Length: 113
Length: 114
Image (cartoon, rainbow over all chains, first blue to last red; front, side, top):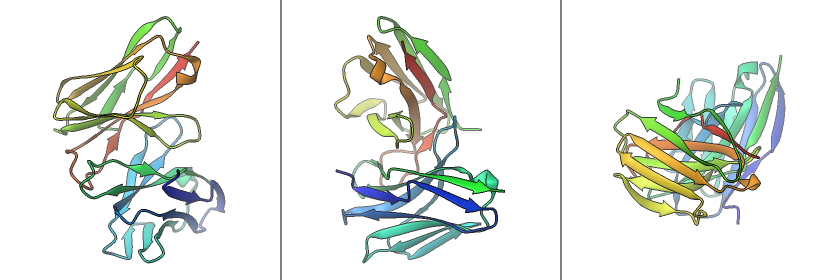
């Protein structure tokens, strides 16, 4: 049972465009939603994270939008660059549950020059 | 550079071999994790250590044996592995197992079973 559904599986964006990756969850006990970026041959790196008490969080070109009522959250990459080409994983964890992460299936992003 | 160091980066072993993967962090973190990642898939949790004690074993076969000798070091001992165990093995650490603690991943060991 996939508790965090991520879409699309792959995404191609032109340089300078906006990349949008979406995630949806069912379990309302989730209260922390990180995004990880993984380059080939590397481990996942924490990119940005949000808690459900805010609707948006921005760090540089990366923004998380959170819709608690719809149980959805998304990552927006503004002014996408070829160096952003990587696999992105959304994740979720529950409060007081030992910091266990439930990952989405991943999105392979390619930014064309 | 990642603050979680994993060695070796690559490992090829036969099904009868015994080998070990090593993970080290010097961030003072007291929670450490082993994950398995297959190609084009998200990481799957295998084990969690908290304050050097095993707290989670996600029904991992006994041919994988974790060990946490001290707060900075985590090992994964491998014996009699199967070809389907070929994968990227990732180590991660967090300050502790409290809520919302960021997990920091190493770059993994790419394991191939012949």
